[in-house]
Image (cartoon, rainbow, N blue to C red; front, side, top):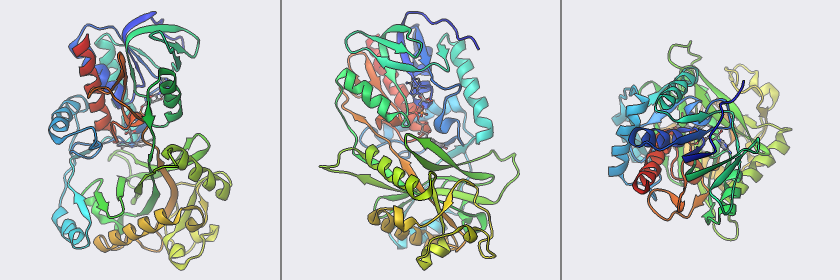
Length: 427
Ligand SMILES: Cc1cc2nc3c(=O)[nH]c(=O)nc-3n(C[C@H](O)[C@H](O)[C@H](O)COP(=O)(O)OP(=O)(O)OC[C@H]3O[C@@H](n4cnc5c(N)ncnc54)[C@H](O)[C@@H]3O)c2cc1C
């Protein structure tokens, strides 16, 4: 398909059409006459807006404390909702689970959530892009930004076209953390990268984790910086995502209109904050992912809880046994032994949290439950910002999950709004 011709200069160029980029584009387009170019290297924006698309509308979910207070987040969440029109899911019986949790030092957060579903999200994204075009934003999909010039305010595209700008907003997400690091090195922006979330994804039958019938994506916080994350049910599947040198598991589900498969999946993640001499959380995550690649022959590992408890590795037969009565949805996962590839501290804290979860919702640790590893969230190149609009140097803004200003769709969109407000102030 022939790409649209792009001008040689725009007032604002936004790199990345995930929620952070979209948030910035809408805010600018609706409040100024600035010429805006939104660039996306894929055919459609990727990440969570495309996959599953669960939106959390309660602070602090998705809003890192170091950047956000409740008051501002609440205002911006209303603005995000104005664009995404969420249908908030009902929650019932939370008090029952919360009382059990409280007794053992666990917190259950009560969050407003909406769920679009992987089958419906492309339409949502398509509609948003059409709205931006109607607001005179130039949107170039399938167009990768190769580099940012060091001295001049210019970017180079993959076809070597050079485009200049007054303001540049970088919103490349977390998968492209190394690209972002290269650009920050070029621009002379200091950053730290010392936090990473490492964990497992649990898959079980819905009857073993019935809380999902009452609360779509229960947010549960355990001691040891372990938390539940991204729960999927209804018609839920586990997927394997390719990162540079390894795979990470993830989960998603289809909208309610699809036939249920009666399975649930969710992540149990532990946040690791590294200190000197290890400085790169993303590198640490990559090394762990590469180790699993070695041990699984180039994939990810899965183990039944029954085998894990007995201290024995899962084998292909473990997935074909009368007690182990459901098939794993991620067919490419390899039966193996978690203890062989997970650092002890991470495994210990996550297993302890799982036992606590089994006390609150008895059944989740049924012998048939499958633990997949690794699920790695390499969030943050945390740039040094010079103001609260995520400006890193005059005319340059870095936002979204890749910059650690958010952890989810709604927070990423809000970061885009905040950067746009900075540009509008200077325009
Ligand atoms: C499979 C999956 C499921 C998820 N499910 C959920 C969920 O249900 N709910 C939730 O809140 N969060 C979810 N997340 C997390 C969510 O995706 C992120 O929090 C959110 O998308 C971050 O937004 P962002 O705009 O910062 O980055 P992204 O959404 O990752 O967008 C960045 C975009 O920039 C583009 N890009 C990168 N480099 C370049 C370049 N050089 N040139 C041009 N374009 C470039 C990328 O292709 C990408 O489309 C999920 C993530 C994944 C991977």
